[in-house]
Image 1: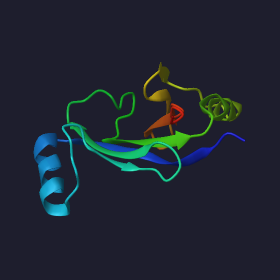
Image 2: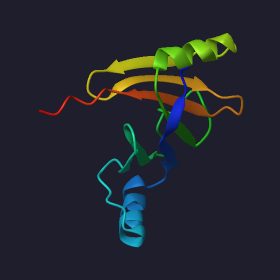
Image 3: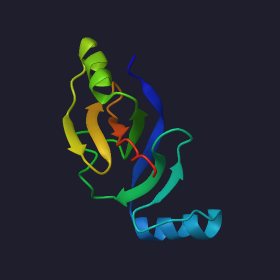
Length: 124
């Protein structure tokens, strides 16, 4: 059955994302790039921590200051399951490098990003 495998990321608005990334690097020792930090998921993908500019429109149509990303095993299956509950996605994107994405709004008005990572290439 299609399901969530784990947390794929926490994305939130910040007045000064660069300064916040620097603080997390200095104070907590996160290895932070110009977009955020990643923690490898034990089975597939990675968990991403990323502050966005306070003026970002990426979380729309939600008015919340954050978005939650979930790693899923079967995006089409999860979307079918959601549709059976009357929930339709607000968008979808298939990215050859990163995998498949879809978005929806939960009952609390929070934007949910569903991510089915691309299958890793077989090692030689």
